[in-house]
Image: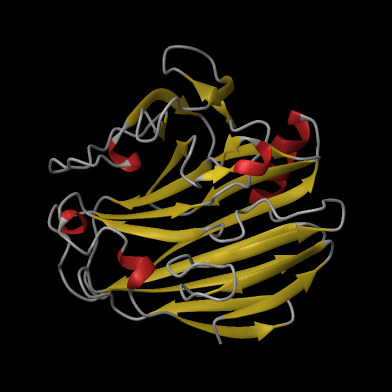
Length: 290
């Protein structure tokens, strides 16, 4: 099946593979649509998706013709697990030979829990690290910014705001302790994951505002989490006379072993608008297992 609908609590989601269906375009997998009882529309651009696995990168292989959007084009299958869960499976991909499983579970009242697992089958990553990139294309919000606790390394962590001026312009935010230099070969088009912001984050979560809702992204796992922003990655919204930003994230494994399985947990919270203190409580409660 190319897609399936799952429900729990206040949420209804459509989970789909990278095939085309109706207004949904080919090449975009993950959460095709996410509806909340308190919101009139999905935060994600209808023809695209949220939590879309977009790039597998090592700074070299993905830059060759036909490889840049490898997860978008490589075969992928969808399995419905229950009324509230579904899983995507992508067999070893042609260029990097990375196999992956992405399980989406809706948890009441307003959470999308994503568990991503991957296994490299060959030592195909040219610069010795594995990079993965997920995109969420936001459907014409009034505020295009991402917010997080952080700032610069020299000061105490405060609320920081990121709204880049152009695509691929100081796009990626690293943690305060992330000193890993991901080797990148020159690429004329530029990439979000190779363009670094001067801002840093203190804790692995960020949020954005959509209509009367707050959308919170939270992360837990080994390796390095990096945030990324584009003011126009989701194209244009003519009806609202604005562009559709991309609120993205990356996961980097600086080292890996062939045949070893690696896992990342993330939670997307789509809830009615709340104070920043509540955003922090959502993250810490998830970490505690509340």
